[in-house]
Length: 206
Image (cartoon, rainbow, N blue to C red):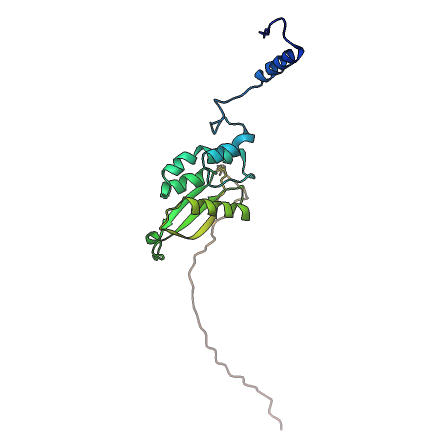
């Protein structure tokens, strides 16, 4: 950029002009700083503060941080409703189911509710449980009291089913043998009775 300084400008003025020229080349993405999807990661904590995000954890993933910022305004508009609870937890990538006291079997204590949060294969630790609990307490309505949080594990995968069909004949060749051997004939029953006497004849002795 050409200098607009007059010919009689002092060296100090020229140095300042050169420094300002360098600063003008530094990108200042003002139009993207207020967008949850376009704000630089390093500036997300300040954007979350500006939008009054109720819960913030530096250990969250980038996607969770951007999700919390993106849903902040909608949560504040519906705070105290079941929809706000669903949106607040869903912003971190988890599914939630709210069970009011009259929906329990048997009925729970009047004015209480329970929360069922599905945890995927990312797992859960004590820090995450405390963070989710704080989100629920800051988003729920004033009259209801949290009776408990249940964590339910969920894992997804693919199920493959296959089938194989094999057909064939087994033929065994053996020497021929009759299936059965039978004979026919008459049966005769007979009986015999024999009676005899033995006679011995000796010469007369004189």
